[in-house]
Amino acid sequence: MDFMSILSSDFAKDRCQKLQDVSYLNLTLSIFILFGILVSYLPQHYRIISRGTSEGISPYFILLGTTSGTCAFANILVSPISRADVACCKTVSTFECVAGLLGIAQVGIQWFCFTVILLLFLIFFPREPTLPDNDAPNEHTWQQALIVAFLCLLHGLLVILLSATLILTRPDYLGTWANILGITGTVLAAIQYLPQIWMTWHLGHVGSLSIPMMLIQTPGSFVWAGSLAARLGSAGWSTWGLFLVTGCLQGCLLVMGISFEIKARRDKSNEDWNGNNARCVVGYLGSESAETDDEGGAIVENEANERRPLLNGSRKPSRTTNQ
Image (cartoon, rainbow, N blue to C red):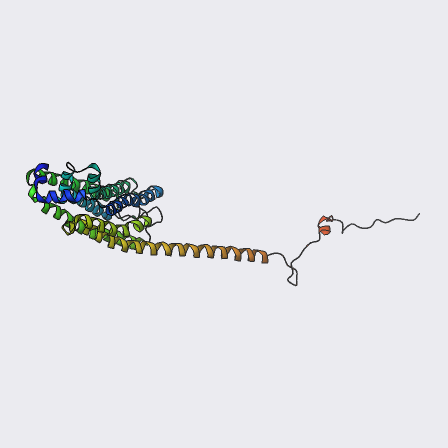
């Protein structure tokens, strides 16, 4: 099915009409979400680079997140709605085309940013047998990290190969394939945060996981899902449903991370307070160890006594003989 045959269908004509009726409210919201997705991942990228380690991030979280993002991106690319919107760009203005394809750009930016996390996870993966912040053993090995990267690459290549094959040979099955990708992505997203939640709970701290990223993305997932639902309708449930599930699970991880950070700050404050008290007690005991007299009073030597020669008191008076 080529572009012309797509454009000749009533469904495609209806999509082209919708692209021409630009909703400036939805356009503003879509642009805001697009930049919000990009900005939300920057704290996570910065945290891994600044700490010099990806400690605290589960490799299974990376694996499930990357494969889920790949399924979501492929889902919106092969969806009949998206393909009709792309085909309509031949007949509508450039502004209307760009406004109509912002949903695809949003999912693509999200996939790209998470792929960057995968690369940073590999580059800064702790290869020592113990974790850098403490002496706890490192539960995951460098070989496991490489296997995760290989599986993500293999999954991406398979999705690209199958999608291209269906586009060229069986375009009528693209709707079914898009739903399969959407359901697969939703399932992967549903279990994506489970290994990360368990690892964060086991470590008792967030490690290199960025709380600011989750603070932005948790409410943003629901806004994004609403924007996609308004654009795609109920027929695109497999696309926007993924982000509803992601927002709920990410919210659970966010609450856990914030509680651990508050506990860590409280413990650090108590340690500093105890340290100050210990120094005060040591100083007080040191002042009490000064030399005292028989009555317990501190002996203070007179400055004149200090300057008096030691042999002055033992000098005998000279005798004079009367002749």
